[in-house]
Image 1 (cartoon, rainbow, N blue to C red):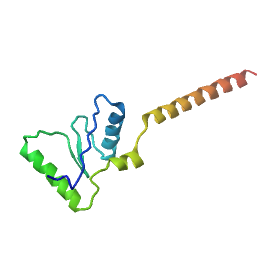
Image 2 (image 1 turned 30 degrees about the vertical axis):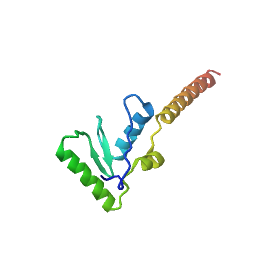
Image 3 (image 1 turned 90 degrees about the horizontal axis):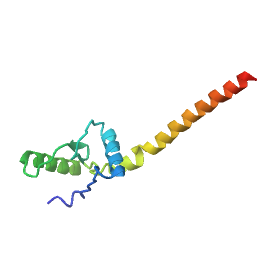
Image 4 (image 1 turned 90 degrees about the vertical axis):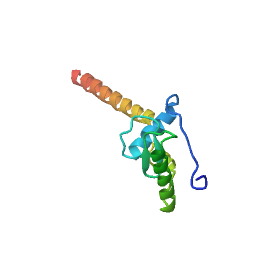
Length: 116
């Protein structure tokens, strides 16, 4: 019914580490504290539950879609997250390891130099 407004994108986070990272980054981007799925994001509105038979949830989701479309807000924030805000855990871990190794090397160097 609202296919002209948006394209639905789904991401399996339970068995896909990359999608799980993406969800973590979307949660950070949205300044949210969500820890469960489903996690539905429409523009700047989020839903943390869904039941196809729940008329109130369905109505609120449709309102968010129409409102975001009418206000010219980008419905898809995923591209913003991927381009501007993507937190790379592997890079952060690598940097921390390098810092630790540099500190250890500095301590060893200072210890050896102090003995001379």
